[in-house]
Each structure stands twice: as structure tokens, then as C-alpha cells.
Image (cartoon, rainbow, N blue to C red; front, side, top):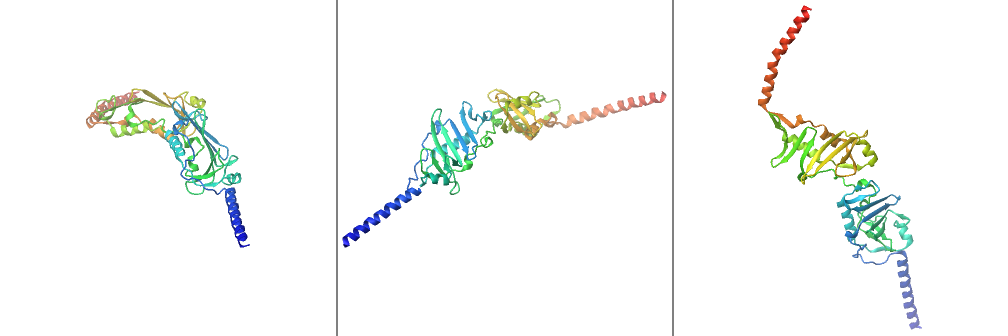
Length: 335
């Protein structure tokens, strides 16, 4: 009898253990390997990145011969550094312990195909390299995630702020900016500047004129810094540039001449077109006006001797002018 009781107790313990294991697995609290890669793909194979948020707004970024672009937004140029940083990070992310693996849990953690915070798909030219959902955040810089080909839900070191679906968050704003060592010449109206071993020089100085190097350097810096705000519809861009409001020409280190054309919109911006690109860019008015409003007079200083000579000439002309005025007065009086 005693042996039967012991055997029954052992069997009961085994049944309880099995039930607990099944229940734990059913609830999704199972073990996992926290140091395995969440995704398995090679970053240099990625040719497109698609991010869709929970509201259905989608952004597709593609690699072109000229770099990363947003095809649906007039082929707007994308910040390559930002794309590379995200792709490299995703390729190296290691998953945490599996926290759940049921359909109900997927909905609860918002990593279900019908309920998610973000859905990310990475593709090569003809293959899907990675496809996963991200949802709720259990901690700072942590987010629940699930691969589309798996039921396992894990926490990965990623932030939803790294998965923006608006173009401006990815835009390469530097396409109109020129590096200092890449610019060797600048022409703005009657202002002709050349870069020499001694710095920037103003061409065509007149007798008694001296270049104001401080103002010239400031002008060059402003002309180099045409940061863009957006890419415009080419139809609207061409219309605004039908009669350019302003332009300047740059000479690059490799000898290329690149012209910057600007058209003024009623709103507070200019449309900018570079002669070596097909796109039309939106630029803040303050950036353009800071260059447009500079005159040649501000870039030169009249030497003292020349000032005295000009003043002397003006003074010498005064008696003649006074005499002419006096003669005119006499004629009027006689009349």
C-alpha cells in the first residue's frame, strides 16, 4: 500500500509538472537564446527598405545609381548615412528571451499582422531579406518584435523613432551644400571671386579699392550653405523658375561649373535648381536672401588716399557748380 501511495504521488507530481510546462508554453513564457541574431541578412544585399506604421502610412526607400531615394516623392535624395546606420543595426540586433508565442499575445504586444506599431520589410533586387513587426515598448530603447515567419515574440534594442515614415526625417538636406575644399570660384552678378593660395580674392578691383576679406569669406560661406527643406513637384518647380529671380555660378575643384537658379514663391521659400541635377528643391528664403542682398560695394574698402582724392575732386567741382548756379540766377532775374 505504501509503495502504491508513493508511486501515485510521483505520478501526480509528474502530471503537475507537465501541466505547468504546457501552461507556461501556452502563455508564451518559454525559454530562448538571447544572444542569437533576430534577423539573418547581409547589409550590402539590401536594395529597398519599406516601413509601414500602424495607421497604414508607408515609406519606401530604394537604392539607385546616384544613392538612396524616395521614388514616390519625386525621387527625393535620402541621407545615406542614416539608411546605412539602420540597416547595419538591424543586421546585428540580437534578440532577447522569447516572451510569448501565441496569436493572442501577438495582438496584445501589437506585433500582429493586423495590429502593429510598425511593419518593416527589407528586400534585395528580387528577394525578401527580412520581414518583421514591432509593437509595444517594455523599456527605454527596447521594443517587442516578431518576425513574419515566426510566432516568437522577443524584445529587441530598437526605437520606433528609428522607423519614421515621413520623407523629411530621411531627406538628405546637404545636396545643395558645397564643401569648402570643393569650391574654387563663385560668380554672383558683378561679383567674381576666385580661391587662391592666399584665400578668396575679388577679381577686377579698381584703383584705390581693397578687398574686404572678412565680408568675402562670409559671402562664400553663405553661398556654400544652401541646405534644402524638401523636393518639389517638377511642374511647380519649372513654373517658378520660368523667370529666375536670382542665380549664381560655382566652380568646383574638378573644373565643373554648376549654376544655382532660384525662383521666388509667394510663400517664404525659394525653389532651387542645380544645373547638374534634375530635381527642384525647396530652400528657406533667409538662406537665399543672405546671398542675394550682398552688393559688390560691401566687399571692397576704399583706401585712404583714394578717399582723399575723391573728396578733393568733389570739392574742386563745387565752385564751378556754384558759379553755374549764380549765372542761372542772374539770367532769371534779368528775365
